[in-house]
Image (cartoon, rainbow, N blue to C red; front, top):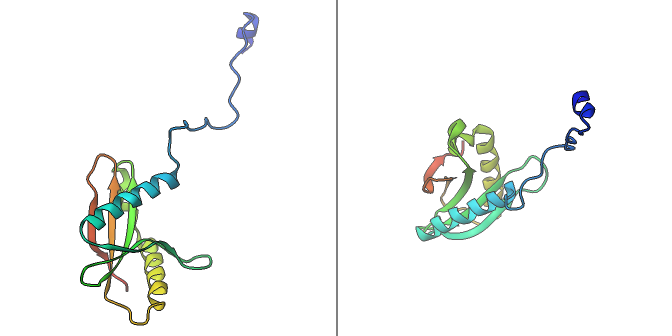
Length: 144
């Protein structure tokens, strides 16, 4: 730095903090919502009907279900949508661990308690990954 000052030039000022994201870059929330839209369109094209979206249990420590749909045979389908930009670290499917499954199951149990007679149900996962077709995994895990 002293050498540049000697030459009569000032060093470039350091930016305070990280560089801002470009205006065109979507937020994580926007990317997640877009992935849910894509998953929903995929499932509706297969004949499922939307019942609820982003169902959350009240209070802290609960769970959330991205999509709740109904099959033609009346089976209630709780869907977790996972979105990843690449396949590193297991891709979209690699991010659904035991803790996430427990939270989804907890939210599904909460949802089912509202119904007079719970229908048959299952837990599906839809994987949305850039440059890959949408992948629908039926009965991806079970309530234990």
